[in-house]
Image (cartoon, rainbow, N blue to C red; front, side, top):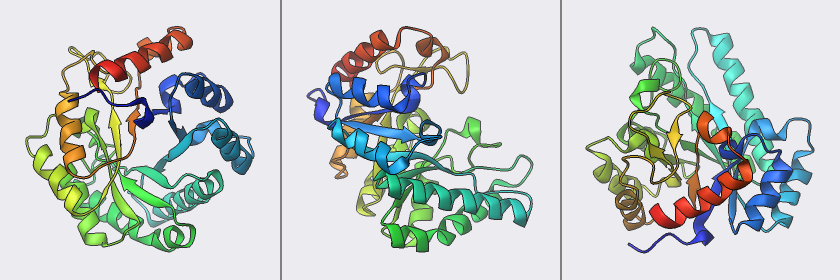
Length: 274
């Protein structure tokens, strides 16, 4: 495959998390990046509508807002609080001009995953009126099974596709992150299925380091690990995906380096390995 074009490069603000949103927007644009996914913490204390305009004035596309979700809870009151926060996220995305919210769906330790998945499905269904009113879509992001205890009971692309089929809404789709899905023997077939459902809303890239020393904050930059990035990219493109390749890296090691140098490494790794 040919190297991915910078025209399809998006970087998540969490990737260079020490930068304020204004800094991220200016530096991403100067580096030739064309898209940005905004994490909600970067919007704190800001006029969200003006922040969205600031980002667009830099020539960047706002790809999505991270994150909503965390629907399961032990009590109805806590599940209602989760819905309220997700409604707030939809309002924030609408004000920002983000067309999509990525959902980290949640789980309850000790609760059967089947019950958590039911609560997730019910929670997403309850948000459909807000999605329809604002035009904001929701993308279910399956997380690696190591997070099944508390972060997400949706752990395979097949489970996410099942939810999309059950919900039957053009506002509900999937965010496929290679870090969470690369290991799955059914991945290619489920990407094909996702394409047939027209549900592949987002595609995230990074790498899996060997050995990995932290299950949350030791992701690799593309080319630093074992994920077959170009093969998976070929599958998502064959399934009809034409959106951004979103670099989302959680890394204590990389956050500690000079972030200007890090941004150069991100762009080079994207050119060389995506």
